Image (cartoon, rainbow, N blue to C red; front, side):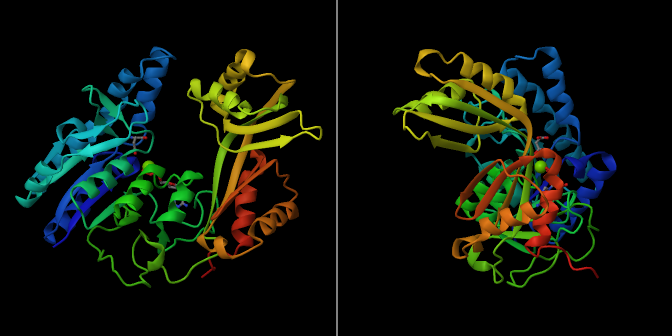
Amino acid sequence: MARIVMKFGGTSVADIDRIRHAARHVKREFEAGHEVCVVVSAMAGVTNQLVAYCQSAAPLHDAREYDAVVSTGEQVTAGLMAIVLQDMGIPARSFSGWQVPIKTNDVHGSARITDIDATDLVARMGDGQVCVITGFQGISANNRITTLGRGGSDTSAVAVAAAVKADRCDIYTDVDGVYTTDPRIAPKARKVPRISFEEMLEMAALGAKVLQTRSVEVAMAQKVRLVVRSSFDDPDADQVVSDDPFYNGPGTIVCDEDEIMEKQIVSGVTLVKSEAKITLRGVEDHPGVAAAVFGALAKEQIVVDMIVQNVSDDGLTTDITFTLPDSEYEKAIKALDNAGDELSYQSISGSKGGAKVSVVGVGMRSHAGVASSMFKALADKGINIQLITTSEIKTSVLIDEEYAELAVRALHTYYGLDRKEA
Ligand code: ADP
Ligand code: ASP
Ligand code: MG
């Protein structure tokens, strides 16, 4: 007997038929004798609608009330899932975040889970009940409902799995596993049977939204065994997930690097669109200048991504370029315009509509030349690179959004990731 957390994303619970189908997966595990907690997202499109309501009520709204509104989608699904399970003869009950409780800090809109009291969940599972828990939400020390950021139900599921000491956390979604790149962009993308936590973390952080980045961080830190698989599969088919290192069954196992036999130099390609770029020229070069630029942005809660700084020949001034989401562009320009005396520069310029394309792979640690071959592959397609950043296991470039998909497909082919035609 195992203890399993099963998470179903928005498309997997988009209507009552889908919820019923998802519930059949739960039934299979329950009837196999396993203890089960279920974590659910809002029905597809619901969270977007709730966010839009808040924005049209007031563009600058109280983040605590935003969370009160956008957290409601998950409560509907949790109740419906419990009803459907009961209708199938499975004892089930729903839990909102505060009822568990799932405690978080008070950063509304992107709260972090600080503690989960699993006592009641464990006791109920022991009594043969399925606990259905709302994803995406928790409760702060001030007794306010919080949400965990878009895609946050993945993190709820992993954190619940860690808290109840589950043997596995199964993430059921609308693709049948983690692919070498987004299969909606590159039809030749290949499902990977296994991926390391580290690679998955980079892939998620660099745009592969199949898992929320934070969920992979928590899984890695707490050693939660994650499986990404399709909820659309036949629930009655054999679904055994094996510990065999050459496992090639349903889904993708996210695990420690040493459990992976075949290590690729590049294991994935990712894309983030709608990236803006801002350049400050002729910034006075003295200690504290970068702190002044990025301090002014942080004060406005603007998160920047790639940063490049160049010192002028005379060593007196510097140019600083950074990227941020298109949606934050005007706010950032305003924040820098108003930064006042501590920040002096000659000019500010920038543009929206960039795309960040990255290649990720643990094999890059021990192989020289991945970055240069990436630049060559892009040059061969006539794609101009505007910015570059690298780390031990990834190289990212900023390019014009117009060429984003072309770049992803070109790199996917270049690194030999394309699916072999049957
Ligand atoms: P859910 O609602 O189940 O949480 P998401 O829409 O958040 O599902 O994530 C699943 C989607 O992630 C897929 O439909 C796919 O388009 C996208 N995706 C992006 N990159 C990848 C990747 N490397 N592998 C698999 N899916 C990916
Ligand atoms: N419903 C939330 C969202 O759409 C959380 C999730 O689905 O993971 O972002
Ligand atoms: Mg998701």
